[in-house]
Length: 425
Ligand code: GDP
Ligand code: IMO
Ligand code: MG
Image (cartoon, helix red, strand yellow):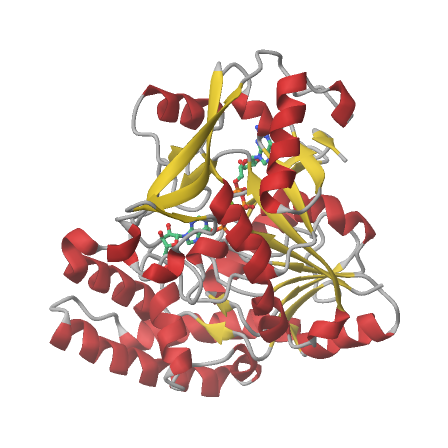
C-alpha cells in the first residue's frame, strides 16, 4: 500500500492526532515529518488521554512510530514524553520508536532565544509556543545546528553542545540583553539525553522506503496546519517548518509517486492560537460559546484559542496547496445548538472577488480583503452518539455536503466527539 499523508487544513489543532490514531489501526509505519514539541496532538482511546508533542499519534497501535528528518527535537521533552507513555503502559522501546539521525536538535538556548526574540518584537510578537522552534530551524538553515545522529557519541555531543551554548550566549547577552545559560551544566544534561536516546536513532527514510517497497502502509503525520506553513501560510505569523503535504516528502525522504491519499483535517469552525490575521474571528458571545463547548485551549501552552466561523476559501487553498484527496471534518458536535451558522464563502476587495484565501498577498494586503458570508441553518440535536451520516439532523448533513462542495473534495470522516469511536466513517 502506498503512503497516506495527514495534514492540518487551517491554523493547527484541527484534530490531526485523533484522525492519525484512527488511521494507524491499519498502518505499518507512522511517521511525524515536521515541527517539534510546539505541536500538541490529543488521542483519547483505550482509557488513555494522550497529549502527544513529539511522539507520533500511532503509538497506541503496533505500527513502528518514526520521527523524521524534518522534525526538530528537544531531547529532554522527548524523554519526558516517553517516560509518561511508559508509565501509562505504552511500549516506547527502541524496537517501535525510531528517531531519524538527520532530525535537528533543540537546545535550551534555542528556547531562551525564542523568548528573547519575542520580547524584542513587542507588539508584533508572533505568540510562539516558546519551544525554541524558530531559532532551531534558523540554525538548521544556517548550517550550524546539531543533528540527532551526533548523539551516538555522547562525549563528543556534549562538547558540541557546549560550543553551541557559548555561541547562543553571546547572542542572548550581546544582542538581546538577556541572561545566558550555564555552559557546563547544559552540556552535562545533553550528555545524559544522548546516552538515553542513542538506541532510538535510525534511518527513517530507509524505514519508510523499505515499508513502501514491501507493500506496507505508511501514514505520515503533519504538525500544525496550512496557514502556519513557512511558505504558504500567513507569514510572518507562521511556524518555521513545511506543514503542508510536500513537507512529508522532504521531512521523511521519499518520492511523490508513492503518495495515494492526502487527507486534510478540518475543524467544523476555525481556531487559531497566537497572533496574526484571522478574518472570520468571532470576538463576542458566539466565539466564547464555541471556545467553552469545544474546550478550545491550547494542548501545548494552555492558551485560549481564538475561535471563528468556517472559512471556505481556506479549504480551497488547502486542497490546492496540499493536493487533498479527502477531508476529515472534526468537532461537528460543537456546533450543535447554534441557531444560525455563518461560513465565509469568498473574499472581496473593492468589488474584486477571490475564492481562494489571499495568503500570498501579505499581511498588509490581506487586511483589505473582507470575508463574504453565507448563512446556514443550525441544528439543536446532540449528535455525539450518531455513527452514520444519514442519521445526522438534516441541517448538519447539509453543512457537511456544503463543505464538500466548497472544497471540491469528499468528506470521509466526521468527528462528533473527542473519543476514538465518536466518529462517522
Ligand atoms: P491536533 O493538534 O490537530 O492533533 O488537535 P488537538 O489535539 O490540539 O486539538 C483538538 C482537540 O479537539 C482535542 O482536545 C481533541 O480531543 C478534540 N477533538 C478532536 N475531534 C473532536 C470531535 O470530533 N469532537 C470534539 N468535541 N472534540 C474533538
Ligand atoms: P498542532 O500540531 C496550533 C502556532 C503558535 C504561534 C505560531 C508560531 O498541535 O496543530 P512556534 O512555536 O511554532 O514558533 O509558533 O504557530 N503553533 C500552533 N498553533 N497548533 C499547533 O500545532 C501549533 N504549533 C505552533 O501558537 O502562533
Ligand atoms: Mg494541537
